[in-house]
Image 1: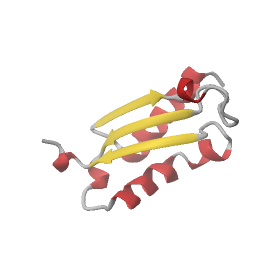
Image 2 (image 1 turned 90 degrees about the vertical axis):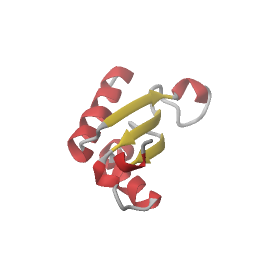
Image 3 (image 1 turned 180 degrees about the vertical axis):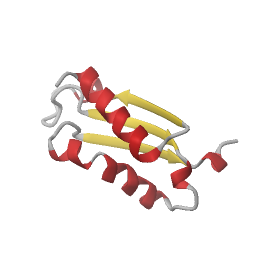
Image 4 (image 1 turned 30 degrees about the vertical axis):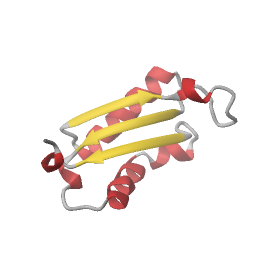
Length: 92
């Protein structure tokens, strides 16, 4: 699977599971060159705004994201995932 395919799959899954108002996916793999888990396109930062996060603590927001991409993590398509999860009401 190419980096572009992997990122598109990540986007499709997060959009289907969390219906984000805003979603930004950043490929951070270049920052991990030489790292044992870096298979190219496997380190991501996700910035996501979703009404599903309303009233939830940060750990539960992260759990929703991890649950959504569980299969990608288990198949080593994603090695590292940094998550910035925000509810729409928290935006200024």
